[in-house]
Length: 329
Ligand code: SF4
Image 1: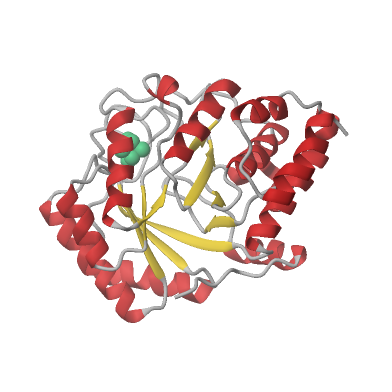
Image 2: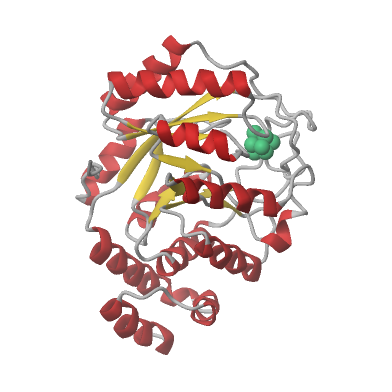
């Protein structure tokens, strides 16, 4: 085993401290033969903080397509000729039915996602009604992802009982301008800060494999850490036809696994959630992420792509001996 791993084993595990950027750089350089040892260390850190439980969340794309932003990975942008569904905010009954199905599947979190730059007055009232209905009818924690917020909107969501607000940084500050031009990385940071200021939980992560370097990946992770997210969703680019990233090759599973383990060591006490692209990128190695640092999963379908059936995820967790983590209330 390489010396950096031996050093981290004693210092990170004994004191449960996050690794430094230099340590993360050393882990990027580890030979492939040390990947199993890196995953084992990340898993042990996760077990000491969290035990074996895995938090499951399901998403609903409540308003799909027609987004004025130009995120290069996204088939919901009006800037690209990408085949994607398009619909206005779903009827309340459909949102409630999806929430009930989520609860029946065994997941404990339900996230309402809309494709907009930020919500207008009408959308806010539709979302608030949905949050109220879901909380009345289920025991799910309700999360939202509605884009850029102002303070009054953040406070209204908090007052409605929204548990966590998702707003991904997506990538590092230095790479962001190659991916999005219609809003700035700083605007994303501002919304993340606002979410924390008003007292909602913050869910913020991004997408790996968009062409960023490892150094930019680490830059992203350490920038994210300054925002102290409760949860870090890790998506892996699933190149969508018609988008500027359509021809990019998906990450190799070994690179994704290395990234998962390094993120776990940077965020020892947070939820690292498997998100979009895991089926495409990890293929038969999905379970390795769960013994390499992951302790949360999005189950069911993603926003523009289809995930594997929830029953398969449940069977994978059962085979690993990992229970679904039930939130403390
Ligand atoms: S990622 Fe979100 S903000 Fe960006 S184009 Fe897609 S729906 Fe719009």
